[in-house]
Image: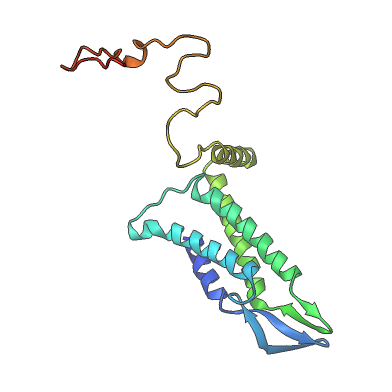
Length: 198
């Protein structure tokens, strides 16, 4: 249930101050950004952590959802990825002409939650017998399976090859009416008289 708690805290954290306005070394907290208007680098990792928490909480409601690679390994990867995204958001906070947006406590909490998700996920993965080599192999196998998936849609027939016309004899050979399942035309059949030109 640790991941469920982390997901809930991440949702709450998204409404806290992530950045405050600073001018000349003085911070004005009344001009701030929360996690939803601080950019993609703030709300995306919070949504990822919230999704992890929701998946972890499903068994408590009598529902189960199979996660590819397993929830522990996915949690470790998503937690690490969320940490990197938030860190990049911190580094790229805007600064211009003596005014800048400085990191606030909401951003720090987001970093802690991302680290916690990665740590708990990795510990659960290790408790299940996994290690770094098996984790790397699983990620490579998943990447290979994704790349080898056949394209969706399109007809199921064999592709047409240029230079090989359909239902036609090769160039230079006479036409055989018995090939292809057809019958030669007999003018005496059908009750009519053959057309006599002239």
